[in-house]
Image (tube, rainbow, N blue to C red; front, side, top):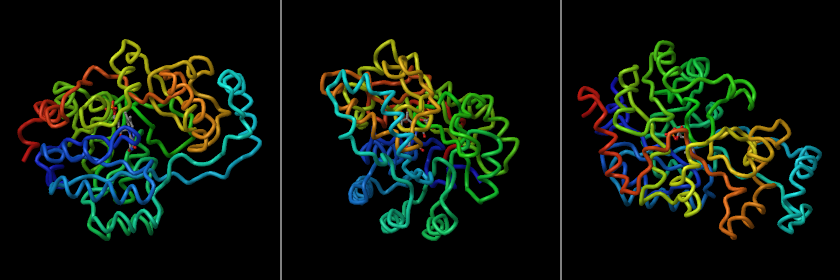
Length: 353
Ligand SMILES: Cc1cc2nc3c(=O)[nH]c(=O)nc-3n(C[C@H](O)[C@H](O)[C@H](O)COP(=O)(O)O)c2cc1C
């Protein structure tokens, strides 16, 4: 089945869900333009998720995607947390922060029965998952309301694993992609072995029968066309939407994206505990972007939060996660519909509806 039939859209193009930099407005604009808009749920409290879904439903009658993380929350390891705060001690001193007063705790919530109850009331036609899939009972609930299920794979093995569990399409996420790596087989720091989009994509296409959606570094109509030439059934674009009018990307993050520094990104686990790609900043430079001693995902968020708040109040992104993919050349200050239609020009005729 073609992706447009599966998703119910005119275009086989997905605006990547991007927690922290967008809410319903971006998804509404993209869905109304004929592609699939996405709402990321990972950083929304239950009440906020309900409000966002209501606004999304109000804004469009077209299909949309609701996205969840599905990590298993780790136990808090007090000794590891204390050792990590030791590493950050010079920064706490510099900013006059008492490390003992920083609460530990999660920063991002995985899909749960409570969130499924909220989602089900809105019956999102597409649900996508990052970091594998939820437990079978929760996945069955999503299927129960008729949603098509998508999930990210960063390797051929992950794509096969997802297909064996019945996903409707696999998102092949290359190493160029902005934000968190979706990987879930192997260790958190295995990213060194992962492939770029145009190396991964044809191998995943050859390995699975379901449609494959290419993600990572695609930021122009030519990039979109290249993905289809390599066997993609659709594309998912994140970074290029970051400067769009409807994105909630902060002024600081927007400034970093516009600057020359945006060409230098790295995978880092300092901000959340899991590798994610962002623009290199002071914390990443000084500590090194990937550290085995960072608290497990998503617990690392807590230790950085007060540093981030102090620095941002002073206009500095030294401690902020400035998520972005390797290819920021498509970021433009335009409405998301205009960007969507521009990207869509790379889609071959036979893939549209
Ligand atoms: C700022 C930002 C936040 C992201 N947040 C999420 C998220 O909440 N859920 C998710 O599945 N993927 C997330 N991603 C990854 C995207 O789904 C996608 O893999 C990536 O944007 C594609 O590569 P590109 O950024 O080069 O277009 C995020 C990406 C960015 C840039």
